[in-house]
Image 1 (tube, rainbow over the protein chains, first blue to last red):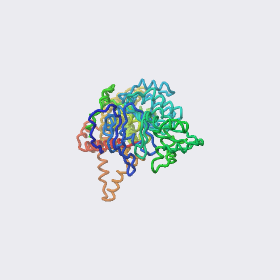
Image 2 (image 1 turned 135 degrees about the vertical axis):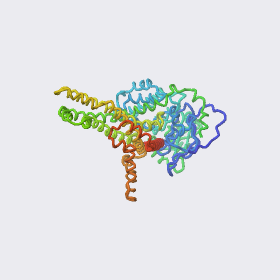
Image 3 (image 1 turned 180 degrees about the vertical axis):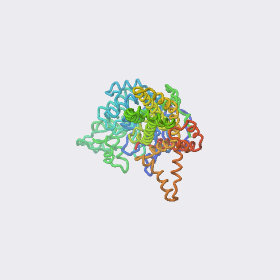
Image 4 (image 1 turned 90 degrees about the vertical axis):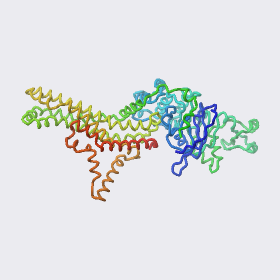
Length: 314
Length: 306
């Protein structure tokens, strides 16, 4: 593996980077999955990694979790995830996918096993979470519904005192009640400012108010990134009154779409007072911004991005 | 390359020191337990074989007084062989069962977790690939053999006690004494334990390790991939040179590194078993086992679900 010996910044920085990548690359044969990713994720953030299918989200997470070798520089909690994976996994937990819990195992055995091998697992805490669900400790995983398996996995993960939690499509295929509950418990029972969460999902509407930071990934590159505070300050969507469409277009919107016979224009860093005159203002959804960012990229049609992106369809 | 690991920001170390420093053996212990939870047939299959055998034996007891009378007319050597035969047969049956169990366990051990995607869960826990593979290798090499021993031991005792009860209930108690002197269970058990651990455990270790390697590598049809390369080598040798040295060599090796063990049946004296440990073949076999296991660890490192 090629890890370039980059000079370490001499003075320690104030916030600790939990994940730091420079020029992260990964190719499968001739397919380039990660095309030089630079990113930095600080402690205490909840970062959404959003992108169309095949954009490299899972590959990026696999590199962070030490599941796949890579090229370039990558540090997770100060460690090289590929060569120091065994130590790293004491401080990192992940839900790679729904339904990866072994189907033959009993809930009680699962708790016993994780308590046996994980130095930071609090069994009583996990049992406390499970007590709030309908999951019986003598049930086998195969007897549980998909939603319950996810609840079980979440209960295990939340009872691990980890510094970094990685969630790859944790709510895929779950109904809306389970999805909502998933993020609610994550925020109320787990997250605090000393933990960091990285999540990929297609159901962007549900994470909009959960995230502190947002990153868009496309074709193996980070194409966009900002904090949610910045997001709310910078971007504004205007339902433009028909007679003012021309005036609005003159302000160079990033994106324009039609809905219910009205033009909806998305602006970046445009004076709000100026926009108020044109129509109703609102904060755009992540999905709207995603379509705008992806649609503006050369070779990407807005429609194509939309088609690839189920969360955006509306 | 790891020069930066010391540059880890302070807070990561001091913030939360691992609440309990786990010794290296704990993940190993729990991994082995996990295997037994998942593969209950490791002990259910030999128990079932023993139960079936005991059932047959129970029926055969009707003829036991008659058989003992017939045996008492023979010379001591034949007498002994006649009396101990059912006990050795029980041990043989359980041994064959556990051998099959071990083979099928190995073929599925690193394949099943990729097939059902649970490997992603196991890899989310701080258990290294080495620990996982070694815990899986310890099942056929140690655990299955101990199970075989325990089940055989219990079966043989049940047989001896049942026989004694039947003989006591029949015309005279005379043959019970004969039975107990001829069937020396403790000595037989010691030999059996030696045979299981040394032969079926350590001598066969390269077979198990090879099967584990194939199960870590194959995407499907692990059994075929495990067998075909050896058949291919055999076939090529046969066609090209019309010889079968390769097959002879393997056969010789797994017969216990010498005819000594094979010629004395399944319960050779313990000294012969121990002396086989000093043969170079034994250590070469273990070296191959180590190479195969190292390969399995490496494959598991790189592979995800299939």
